[in-house]
Image 1 (spheres, rainbow, N blue to C red):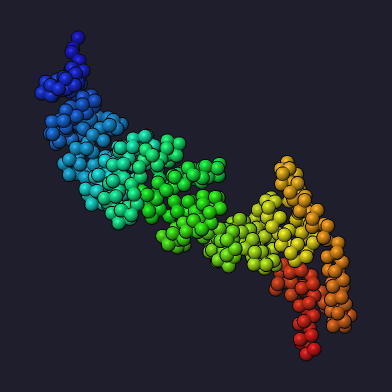
Image 2: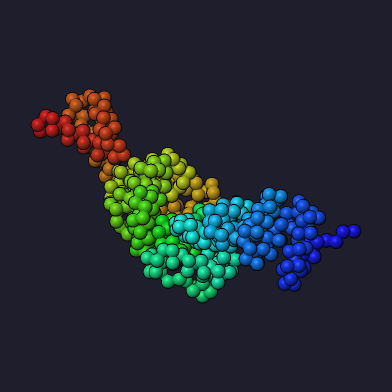
Length: 433
């Protein structure tokens, strides 16, 4: 039975006898010329001895025999950095990360290679990813070291931001769990806020902004979290900063618009929501929000038009019916308001949402208590206007109806008395009365 030279070589290396180890690796390779592991292990010995060219040759041989020997990519990248073959090192690390996307040390080394190659923007991304992954793995020291690299590469923004004291400012429960530039990170932060952990969400987003003070999505998400806390001024400040960095971002205009409604800045809200709607014209929630802004300005007819469009796109959302019901009630269009309340009640009944069902039922009862008196006044006014119009058209009501329809087409969403008054005013003006 032939001796196992590979095992002997590894034992000799571990004992510190590098010369004997190299001889044993030579015999192991002669014994098994297709053994990728033998070339890889001998490469480690050459690397340890500072013979980087020989190490690189052995790693290359190992990979030619077994392209799936991922550790050889990292080892070869290390010697390529030492040999100043930076692009080769980056290529090796890209291959490795394609198979192991959570390998923090590979991002770290890639950042070093990119920095030495003069590609600072890509180095920033690599060090940022390494810092986040190290922190996820509770490797605080390496995470701090990568943060220092970021500070050195981007001195102006990061000198103004203190490097976080990771052990005290971030707890294990508040650590980000995915790469910062991924959508999953932002979605997770918002989910934490939705479930009541606004503090944890803010810690994640603060940390993201310490790594990249120009992260538009982080500002946008933090603004949303502040909004959930009803901290409107901080929310607006974050949305403003996001728009300075990306002026045409529809999602930021959407969220700033909704926040401005809470502050009573209805015109500003409409301006933001108009930009968001231009980018996403079929988004019912944007039309609904703009309707709220118009209702805040007491422009009930325009609010009703927006609510109606929103309902056509999102017909099973009871809260939009409630918003339109309030606008109808403010215009004293009681019948339409009652219909919208009844529609909302039906949805809440079908979904067995009894809390909201009883809330809406109370609103409906309050409206019905005031409806009779207002209806009498409205009916008397309407009858008087109809009689006036009938006299102006010589008793031909079909002519009056055509005139009313023409005005209704030009000014949708108004109440009946408005159309009657408009037609009467136009006829009297034309007659010079």
